[in-house]
Image (cartoon, rainbow, N blue to C red; front, side, top):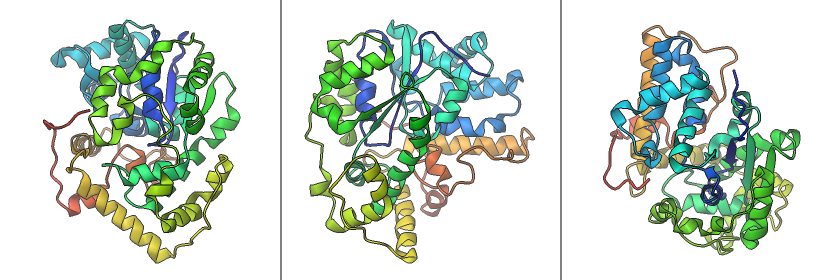
Length: 386
């Protein structure tokens, strides 16, 4: 089952800390485009659709719809809704399109675009770069905007962030995996379906970058896109430690930050993990690789897992969203016990079974370490800004 729209949906993808939020913000300022906050629908729901049972069953479909409608990190994307009836509204909208995950997905975004008074929608979830194939199955004429950045800068920001990898090995590995995931699609998809944006070039000449972006999506260039930093979303994100830059005009000041933020040893470890990928993307000045032993890698991986879990309820942590992710996993198990599903499909959908399944499905920490540290769930938090 697939949905094709005359107003082609736009998917902004890229490794985290690579500029996806910037592209989300500028696109959302276009008079014809509605681009809400991150959805995380593909990582968190798409691989696990089999756990809902046959979606042709009305009750199964309703369960999926309710979990998606109420499961946004930014509740209802700030839309004016009645929470008691919103999921049923989306259900009816989805049924008018298709009784499927894609139908719910499109219904949610169409609802947002309708409230914004715009004819076309787009979405930004960085980890969608691992789900390009699934997106194409659901929306065959979708357009992809892939922004990439020097992985050393992205890693340097990760190590200073309140979420994500906590040491250079883990950051470099995740960045490399992201670039490798999209590489086949960059080579396969046509020029009217895939656009590469190099972060460094974009911030050095944003007007040319935006003109090129608009030409790709088939929209006229709009100068108001440069005023993205004045919007409520940008101002709200700008209050957080990890998104201050989005509340400022585009600048080059974040290019090359790794030179001051990463030690020589970290630069060498990055080169060992992802130097070849860095070179393939045209970046130079790559340090001499520093190979790590198996015991060193195992130590970094374990410490990354421990630190991610411990940081969840810290300043800027993702404890509320993580708690909902954990709840979703609990619901999958409850449905298994109720007989909705009994065994994994063969082959199992990606990333089920991958060593980083939890991260690639939207988790910020592994259940193993959350349980180890007895991390308590929180479903609301006054200091949550997003």
